[in-house]
Every structure is written in structure tokens, then in C-alpha cells.
Length: 223
Image 1: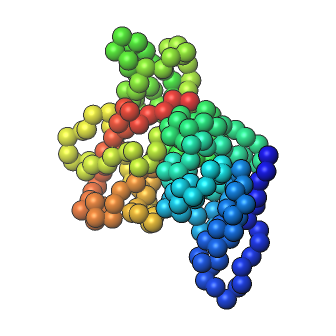
Image 2: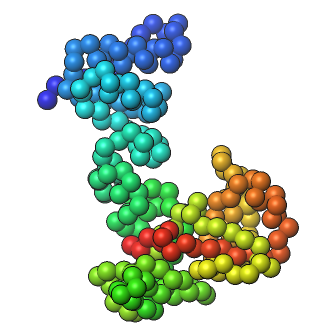
């Protein structure tokens, strides 16, 4: 299969963005069957332009999962040079196959639980964690008493003042610290529970003496 890697350089007195786009234009002139890209300067609009201008398949290496979801037809996850999972981007990110893959794709809450109840008729389960219980989705292929890992993204959790009525499927939690993130704050609660919140929401609740953390049933991924 004919392929072309973007390694040739244009004059260095041009801006990096102009140079990079020039490299892409030159690479597309011979009509390659495959284009190899690294993450340097690549964004969704540029990928769209390349697809409109060329029939070449694009193989891109990037740690940007948002870009992969927006632009890729298939996501291949590598760990130490080994393929650990592949498939449609949203399918891979929503259903990591192992605890290690869940960590690799940035899921912060990975907790172990025992299956206390399974109800296929209602498509529900009951999960016992260390110090609290949660309702979850039905877990095919498992039995009552099985130990499982549950992965939940920090952005999927919701937090409320502890003096408010308990939300559904929630636990009472003690705030340990709040750390800045690019798009808000990450709250760390006792028991290694992490929730993302906007700065404005945190400012309104920063004086809470206690907190509720809600685990929406649809956010629980049983591994």
C-alpha cells in the first residue's frame, strides 16, 4: 500500500501553522492512499478539509480523545505499544474492556463492588461498595455475590449540599480537596470519589458542611 508520512519541511521563516498546512498540501499532491499524521497542529476543521480534498485513509496518533470521537471512524488504544482495544470511538470510551483501559481513557472513579441483587425483568442491579450501596443497570453474565469493578467518569457525577434532601442513587460524602482543571474544578471526596464541577457552581456551594454525590444509573459502567 502506498503511503506518505509528513516529514519534509517547508522554509522555517513561515509560521508553524502555515508550514504544517503546506506540508499537508504537498503530501496530498501525489494522491497517496494513506496519510500518516501526528497530533501537531491537527484539529477537526483541518481533518474535514483533508477528507474533502483527498480519498486517502488517515492514520493519526493523538492522546486527544475529544478529537478522536469527533473525527475518527475507528479508535485503536495502545498501551506500551500493544493494542488493548479497538472499535468505534464512542463504543470504546463508553465500554472499556478492563480496569486498565478505563484508566487509560481517563475514567477517574474506578471502584470495586459486590453484586447484591440482579433483576433482569426490571433491568436493574444493586451494588454494594465499601460503605455504601448503589442501584445500577442489569449486569448480564454475572451472578449475585460476584465481585466487579465499576467505572464512572468524574463529569457524570452530580453534587448537592448535604443539608438538601438526598438525591436518588446518592451517597453522603466528605470533601477532601478541590483542584483546578481547565474547564472547572475536580472535587475529591473521601473514598477516592471524584466529581467535576464548574467554578460558578463550586462558589455557590463552597461553604457546604457536607455533600451528596449522585451516581446516575446510566453513568455506571460495570467492567
